[in-house]
Image (spheres, rainbow, N blue to C red):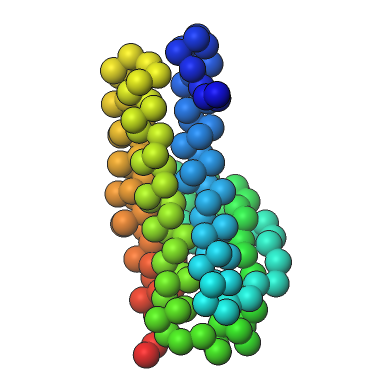
Amino acid sequence: MAVVSTQYPLLLRVPLLLFAWFSFWFFIHDLMHHAVGKMFGIRFQYYFLGRSAIRKLNLPLVSSLMRRVPVFVLKVDRSSLSGASPRKRRWMYASGAVASMGLPWIIVPSSFSLGPYWVGVFFVMLVLGNTLFTLYFSPKTGDLYRAKLVKG
């Protein structure tokens, strides 16, 4: 049984689709770091609320907002990280950004089938915007930047 259905009013379907997008974008990020790290023998100590690296970009509105909004941060066990090969460390770092760009695309077909055409277009723009922003941000201060810094 589908969680979102055309039987529900549009004013309920759009927020449910937004929740699905947010879940695929936000919650999967650290989970993917954890899963890929565990697969490669990298351990983690704990999750905590910290600040996003987006704040370092000096984008007027976005950086200011991200200085105030807490995000989940996964604390890496340094000894297991240093014991992993450079390739494994790169994959662990990159996995969060890749998952946050890729998995939200899953909701696009549903957004076209569950609402008027503009709903589908809105979600394509949202997911595309997220992908483009991540491709811009991540190599500068985020996960792809950390992956690029790995020597070897």
